[in-house]
Length: 194
Image 1 (tube, helix red, strand yellow):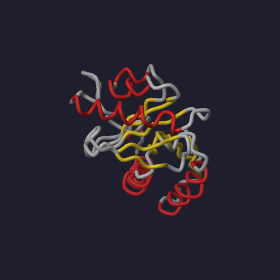
Image 2 (tube, one colour):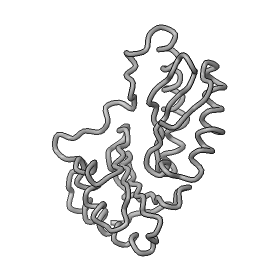
Image 3 (cartoon, helix red, strand yellow):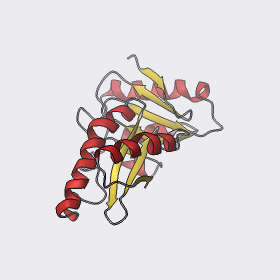
């Protein structure tokens, strides 16, 4: 099995592409920031066994691994490639039985917003889903909508995978996403990391 790797803007994260579905087309990604969280995924749990692994993000067709700053990629990359190849060759399930991909990227359900606020949130979510998430997935990460505060116009987003802890994430959040949302949705005053 040939697994491609790609560097990400975050020097502590690397994207692994096994050449087949990880969560599957259309699935929302799942972030495993700790070994305890990885219990829901045999793949993520196995990758956490490699010394220096600090986080796993599973996407539709990729795995992003975040390492400790003190660890060099050249020391752990071969072990990670072997673990991913062995896992997919064995045909094991990516998620534990009963564990499912995130059913919704919303922390505050859409139903909790009413009237004009709901329309604003729908516009924000649509822009994030169609313009932001595909771009950051290409870099091994994800950005998901968490909450909109109508009174202040603040949008809260969660950074996952390679985006979490990335040195350029603040720049992406403020200069890229905030400017785009303010342009298309005038009610948005600013964007903050959740």
